[in-house]
Image 1 (tube, rainbow, N blue to C red):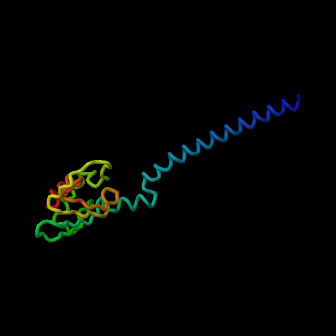
Image 2: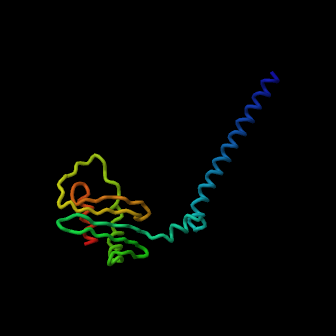
Length: 154
């Protein structure tokens, strides 16, 4: 009987110790996750400094196609505005008001495959922190995006 009593006490101590270790682990994880955003928010990390100094938008844009049209090519940077586009500040003001213009197209959507003039915008670079590499055609599923870009760049 003495051995059974000792065994029960040992099990109780083990469970209590195990629960204590688990509680400490949870508390440490909570403290660590709370501390990580605070250090990044103050800009002490090297990644934060690099992000704030980069342009909000940095794109290379090529417009091709159309009847007898020659290809046009520009670069555009926003915040600070710059690049080879003739009026980068105006283009940036319009483009940054369209945060979803380069978002992924929805899948399983039927699109009209009527191409108006086979004009295309090839856009690559970064837009609001996201990488962009898209071909936007004057027709089909990208017609609405093409119209938005065409209002900005023509």
